[in-house]
Length: 450
Ligand SMILES: NC(=O)c1ccc[n+]([C@@H]2O[C@H](COP(=O)([O-])OP(=O)(O)OC[C@H]3O[C@@H](n4cnc5c(N)ncnc54)[C@H](O)[C@@H]3O)[C@@H](O)[C@H]2O)c1
Image 1 (cartoon, rainbow, N blue to C red):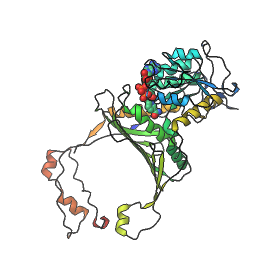
Image 2 (tube, rainbow, N blue to C red):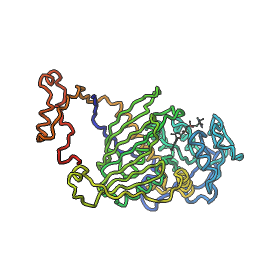
Image 3 (tube, protein in one colour):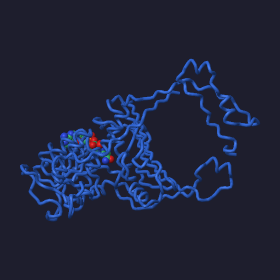
Image 4 (spheres, rainbow, N blue to C red):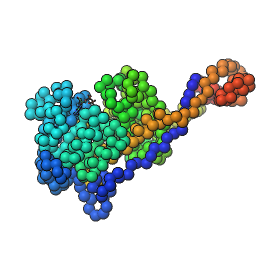
């Protein structure tokens, strides 16, 4: 059987402030004294937006919000914007009109053709749900007009574009967030709180699987940027750790230029192992996160918003063979009960509050900041770079030698099994790169279950 391996790629440390001017950002550290607060501001020369003082000093009142993109995700944003307390939904932009009839029940909300039409109505913030490749263009236009933005994930199609967006919003002191909605999934919020409280002890490993059928509408990016960015963001968020190294493999089976399946293995800064299996090629829809540590394993299902804890066994077993076979013994399994609010509603509430109240420097205001979104795009770029990596170590593909049966009467030792399966010297000489024959996975007699 053929196998391939490559050296792990070291993930560059987080991008530091790309701005040339003094920091006026929502999440840069405050230089000294009271932390200033950022919020909507008017950029000089862009008179279409009514002038208001920034942050906490702006008068209380209803926020005027708009939407760009009325597709599969945009229709959900439209539903929530239409009923969000403290927000007036003033209009939506989509050059294709309203393909899902999202605004049919909202006669006062016009469908517009261009972002400029929306800006002309006067908006405090805009939700950007157009194709990923357009996030940069639309986001820069909003920032230039002093408008705050909640931009769908991923923040942008490339790390460079994401950096330009961070710079544009930070330089103007505008609140800007990214729609990494998994962070608002109640199962992951519970999981993070329990990890923070130390319930798992040391964290050893984070495993995620995100599989499902092909979304024909997504053509501008591959599955790494479209879906795996969820896994990258949530892994960093629940553990509070940066990615340190990773290696990845991708395939493209759909005939599109971009990949549609990826496997990533990596490590976080504290040594926690991670793995992500993400694809658009499965009839099985799965959104699985498992965190294994000292005291057991948490499993979060973000489709059902369930969180289950499988505890290590505290009860000693006298059954020696079973104990040896199992390793970590089974303990109690608990599925927690907790309130389950729709994650997208919570994401909108947090963003509305951040725009209304401002975000103190050095804090996130409960939103996923564009700087965090940039970091996720950078890690996704490292995934794709690793998948393209030519530093592959190809292992020999000699057929496995037959396994000689070992009778139960004979004493089984590692040496005896290795001798029984030894590859003749002649074949080793003919294929010098063939790895030495390995001991088959025959457990010692004492470890076999009765
Ligand atoms: N957070 C999530 O879980 C989640 C889920 C799905 C999609 N998304 C993101 O949302 C974005 C949109 O994805 P989608 O699935 O809704 O795609 P989609 O193709 O269904 O919708 C995109 C819409 O944008 C419109 N559009 C195209 N150009 C435009 C422009 N210049 N201005 C305004 N609108 C324009 C299209 O006509 C279309 O109606 C993507 O960035 C995607 O990654 C996020």
